[in-house]
Image 1 (cartoon, one colour):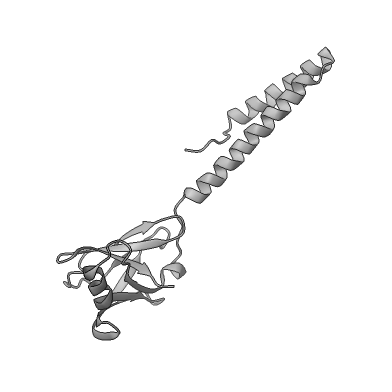
Image 2 (spheres, rainbow, N blue to C red; image 1 turned 90 degrees about the horizontal axis):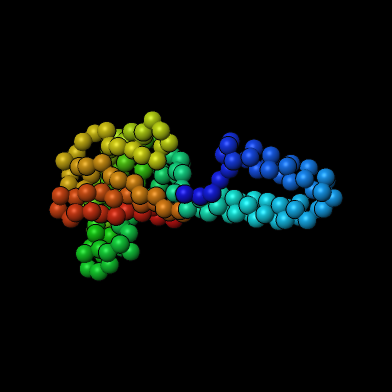
Length: 170
């Protein structure tokens, strides 16, 4: 959790600053004001850096427009023969018309296509569910969205393969 000012701390800092200035005027010494100025600058710098750190570390906020596109198996999660096979045999597309096209392929040849209607959540449209229920093992269950700082991916639970990791293609 980052450092931040709230409605209680900030007025106390202002009162403390005014008190030191008044003291300095009556004591005819500006040394406390210079010290306070340095401390105040350090506090502000620390607060600004904390706010920047919190912004950088927060997960990306997605829009429906960012979700639309083509997805393939991400072989970075599990490399090897099985990941390569899944990459060659499964992919999907989310369209602007709220449809999901799930493709069973043999490399670049589409063998079978499942067209499903999807519904976005009432919150930000980064979550969606498949409205029509196909019993095909990969799209049988709703996917889980994982968001990082710059990227996101979906995990589908397959009854046969376990977790399948799909990432949007650039």
